[in-house]
Length: 115
Length: 112
Image 1 (cartoon, each protein chain N blue to C red):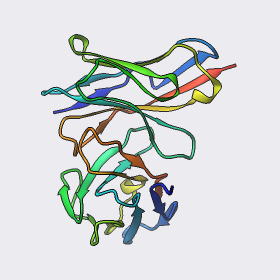
Image 2: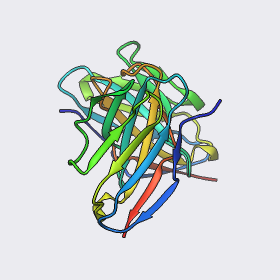
Image 3: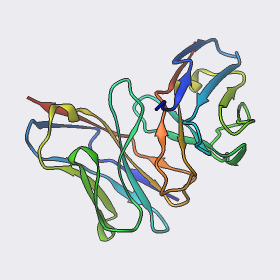
């Protein structure tokens, strides 16, 4: 079956621009996570959705970052006024119900480069 | 606060030799611990997880890990390395199921 997909695979933008990163989770998965992975680092938690609602957004670094999941399936991570420090691989994961006993399935990531 | 520390950002082993990747955790409550593998140009894949059942956890591809509370460790092992095991390995901890904290990763090289 289809896994988690993310588009685009690569995004190059200029400082100050707005970007949207898309995540298509596995069908039927109610939980969705966004992570950011900087070079040489492990994934860093950003936000967790349960259904349509953001159950935990404490990992978002500042108010330039926002994510939505309006129909409980596809999610979009939105970054306003991008900065060079936002350059990283943005990972999305989904799981059937959420929680620590549930396996997260990761997408291949979107590599964001801010020039 | 929770965190994991992976000792050794790069580990090299000969094919057929023991693989040992180290992970120590810090958690104020009983943790749930995970090992993930990331092959080049692929997404992270769960190898195994500890969720307070048996302390010795067996995962995919012959890997296993042992939860040792006294040592706050969750080291990953495999008796005999294969060339296909070359990848980046990440240890992660969670105690809420919402937030997962990952280590900085260990790159495993298998020498033929």
